[in-house]
Amino acid sequence: VTVYHGGIMEKDEFLNVKYVGMESVGLIFDSWPLFSELVGSACDELQWNSNEDAISVEGVIHYSNSGRVYSWQVRIAYEVGWKRYVNTVMKISSISTLTY
Image (cartoon, rainbow, N blue to C red):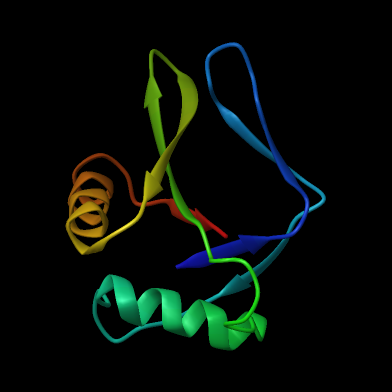
């Protein structure tokens, strides 16, 4: 899982996302983690203090259609949403990113 942080995400007229001024860090898991494990690992890696604002998780699904690549951003706020995101990514793409 690639975690992007800092900077901003810009959206074009088709709602495709582009990362501007963001840093990234890779997290490796033995298997798909629970949502709480993912958030916990990201917080640890980014040294996120629990007294700060709550962490926000957004997944990006990359897919292609008619030779054009699209990047669709979805908010992930709980375990069921995380499972749906993982299942969707596994069905349509081998590339996924998460933004905090």
